[in-house]
Length: 396
Image (cartoon, rainbow, N blue to C red; front, side, top):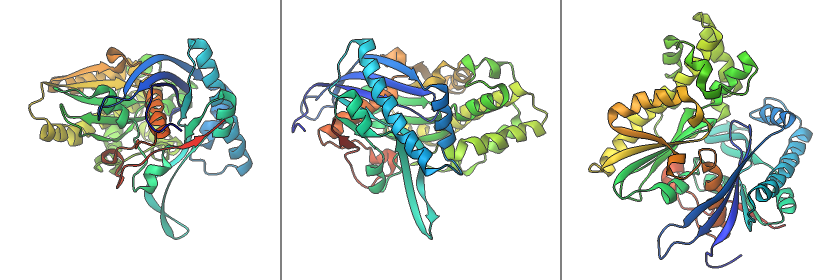
């Protein structure tokens, strides 16, 4: 490995909680002058969906109550093949050659807070996708397994994107709130003119909406929020769901399908049915749950934080990324809740980062940092006791 950071093109590979496929971002990264942040330029982005059977296998493995060790091992290697091929295809499609790859892998279990196992408290996280297979197929070094180093440093190993948020979006005079709407909703608040930040998972983004759509309509997601738009929100169900302890718990905190996956979706649909909900009403209520839990998190945690750190900021920009940015009904609910507070709502695409590319760009940056043995976590976001270099390097 090199001793001093040099410009290089890095492929960032992200497959999130929605498990709909892989986003590959090809990014040129160079060190900033002195202590300045690295400089990043997106050269191109490609989205490669999982084949139907592979997606079904991934969804079945997430927080599975029972699955064979053999199937987990096979899925781990099959995903490694897919990630390696995805990097090759993205480079061919975009006409760009990378020298390093950062591969998040597919999270199949994440437990950021201790729970008893075999009589003792334990935290754990697991992302699969065999890195040796990726490195071999892509013919380049691969950085993977980003989360464990933060966890052993006392953190929850999530969220990891805030370091990218700070590098790319921090502003001298404007507060910035970066909202990612993937399967899980996570936000990063950066006060104007400071290096401070607050970041955490607020709860579900599309994971509950998608689960309800799959159960009720046999569709992967609510395109443009059209189904939610024609439904009515079942307020009693919404208010009951918002009483879950997770929503009121202060940061740092992280969540996933373990909290808002299949078990939650089944119960949520049943609760809606008891109130006479039609199918579209369930989707409308699930969409409202995402919006209201985000707005609650903003009012409870983000607004006070920004007011304390940057009370004289010119304005606050609320910048949305992830697949949920394409859900017009969800975006309207967020705008309706935020714009009366004087907050400008936009998407990351308005700032030069395509909504689906942001997390892949973040893992390109994390790989670059690890390659140069620089810390990649933000203890203020994860709760870690110290900085840590994140990820393991696998050579081809």
